[in-house]
Amino acid sequence: MTVLLRTHGLTKSFTLHLRDMRMPVLSGIDLSVRAGECVVLSGPSGAGKTTLIRSLYGNYQADGGTIEVRHRGAMLDIAAADPRIILAVRRETVGYVSQFLRVVPRVSALDVVTEVLHGHAPEAARAAARDLLLRLNIPLRLHGIPPATFSGGEQQRVNLARGFIAGHPILLLDEPTASLDAANRAVVVDMVREAKARGTAIVAICHDVDVRDAIADRLFEMTPLQEAA
Image (cartoon, rainbow, N blue to C red; front, side, top):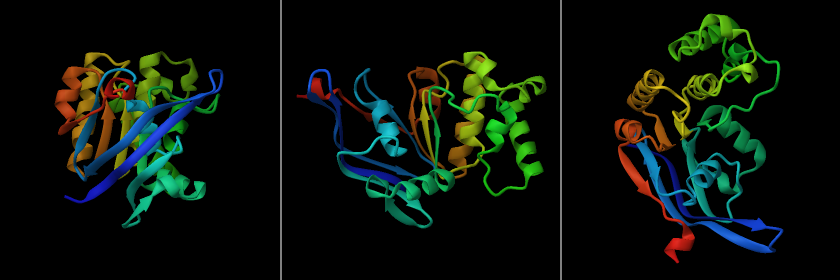
């Protein structure tokens, strides 16, 4: 299968200004993910799993190494890309479900999901968003309400709908089921399996062992650099 995402020698550290020091988090990360494969990042808290996910999405600037994604038929190093290119990659190629929903206040749940579908006919986009919200057990009466008023689990399901609806070739999932009950976790597992069947390359953080075992094709072990030293 085709490689859709790979990193080579990826490094990332953070500056602790109050202590005037640099804290290394990622060093020499070599990761490759193929179409239709789900790789789950594994390791203790502090191993850099979320830092890696955010680096893959371009939220964090890498200190060194490459982050290549297959975008418009060719491998593109987003670690060295112009911000405008990164925005295009997010629109077309890489989807992201973070742990928390961050959206503009007073925008309805339906519009939060629909706005991801750039270039689609408005009515078709709204119908697709409505269907996905219903699948994730967000009732119709909540579709017109801003999700800032929702429970944590409801917000996470809106976040999942927003992340999955565009069908990006690459999907990054940061604890996608952390706030969900068993029934909704099962829905998400089915959605991940369907995405893999379509050829989506997925990188996930998942501490729920049952969900991890249900979606992972393999684990990518990570160790805190302080422990590895």
